[in-house]
Length: 130
Image 1 (cartoon, rainbow, N blue to C red):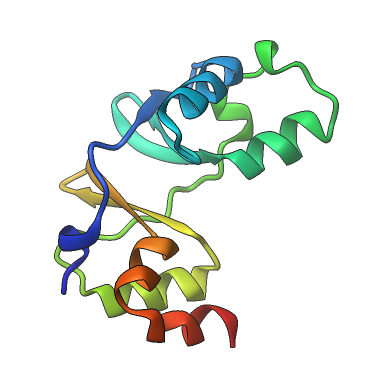
Image 2: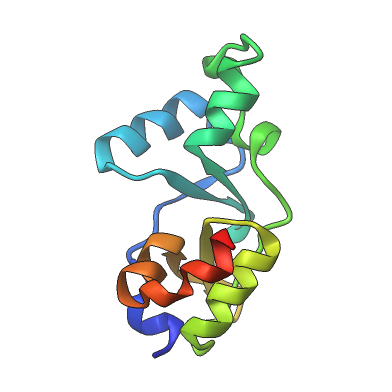
């Protein structure tokens, strides 16, 4: 099974100049836990709920004054849609990340999460937790 077979799409992306309040609102409205951040239309970083909690709330900063580029995790770690699920699982475990944006020819085409992988192949749990 390949990454393209299990990835979620469409993927939500926001520009690096977008305010964190808008990103958080979009995440709530869409029921998602992360947003890929773009620079000049190309994937550049990612913001997760954890980024907002630790980099904004925990530091008592005003989300209405902070741009995505200030708190995004970068450089963005990505995988290609033709990669196998096993490759994606090992790669995510090695990089210690929970969400892998899927990029083809510099274009964001989807995202695959640990949950996506473990739902289909529970035996991969050993990669992440042992």
